Length: 334
Image 1 (cartoon, rainbow, N blue to C red):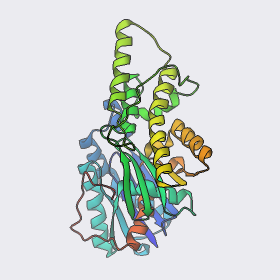
Image 2: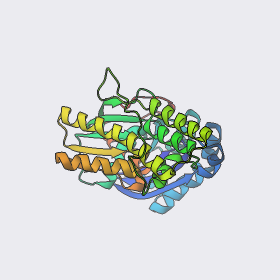
Image 3: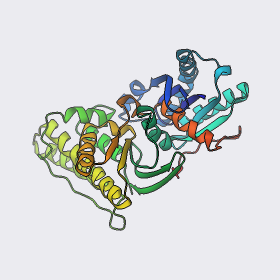
Image 4: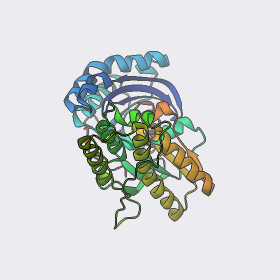
């Protein structure tokens, strides 16, 4: 089954053709980093306009790369939630137009489900059930993947996401956008024990996260150091803060895995490309004899191939939308 998938939930316009949920026939991505870098973050209105400009060429490129015509496809899939509403609407409406013109079924796909499905493209033998840590700029979840379309949130952030926290820390250090990537690079060779940061815990849930205090702490620390004229090694600061954030993620993931009896662990989302998170998760899994699954780096960030992977299983489960499908800014993965 060949599915054309479209992704436009934030600042990447992407299209891909995926076969049977496991094989990438093409993947085309137009990045908007140059348009947002001067603002230090994604500007929703600019993102929507850029999607509108890029989407036709991106979809055509994906079809050409796969050697497909619309008539060769079995379905059209699109990310419909969650994300920036204006950005999502561009992809949803384009997919609806293709579905109407071609007569192909329209498959709505949840963005976080797609990130989890990126692992199916990396590991052809991976099957549920497993436990997945979903970490990105806007989300931090521990998700029980009971089946391909059956999910349960075990833990989640109560305030800021880990990705946003890393981005804001990078910005406070004077690193360019996108912050998390540059923070990871800056941390190479740094001493992760050079600075100490708080270890927040959520009192009424042992699996939930809280990162707002950590973000405030490093911003205040850097501000005070600047006021006093104190200098610091940026690689040490980056390594210390990145280590503190990723430790919180891995500690809760470890506890959830042990408490719920999971021995198959997966990472997903943009922050799953972070070197410290990968290293700490690998160490934790080795200590307990867990199997660890990580998307290849090219599939960690937003892309349409992961949408096509999840769409295959959504279709098999009977999830097909009418042409009144709308975009939704916020929606639980469950």
